[in-house]
Length: 299
Image (cartoon, rainbow, N blue to C red):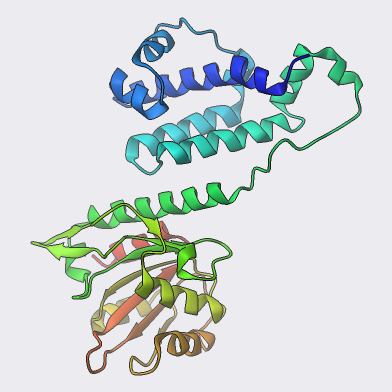
């Protein structure tokens, strides 16, 4: 009797670890950095590098495996993926390959009796909530890198600070919205990020995004900027733009404004201020990187 988990451990994992180690080394990682990224020993990395670990050539040749190695390697190298996110991505592919696919075929070869049994079963659900949360956090990280690497972005940060947020597909509260703890601030002409993106840390921008979604917007991300009439005019040439009343309650005012807006994947929402309220512009888009790209286009 052989379990499919044995096939994963003996055939798939050594192969994909070897492929990832090779990919990260080609990206300039040291042997120690590869070991830390993959959660393995340096001696194991050395064995992979010298070809001392046997690979399953069918796994190596699978285009989905190769694409995953490229995606995970790039994500780890650029900081978009944490080790947890990388693990989730690999786990999802494993579960998919177990469902009547490559790993199921290898399992049948290891235990021929399975081929004679007309049965199918689901080992795990690949559409896990953890995967979506990690993907959303990675998306916010990419957007932050786009903005902080852009010359002049700090000048668009309002006095209250800026944030970059993205929500889950079924978001209902700010706990379903990922953003920067605290806010991005201008420090001597540079945008400073106070910490790693988390869920539930952006009450202000998250509230605007959720209110817009309640009114029918399909946007899942937002970036807030300082208000400037010329800035709004420039944005209006390419995106639907609506104003809401800063003196009214933010949620209700945003919902009312967005409900009357032209349907679009992107949307600019702004208010021109009130007593004790700084005027702000919000750029809404399907993803955080897309919102960041719109902002970068203003520079």
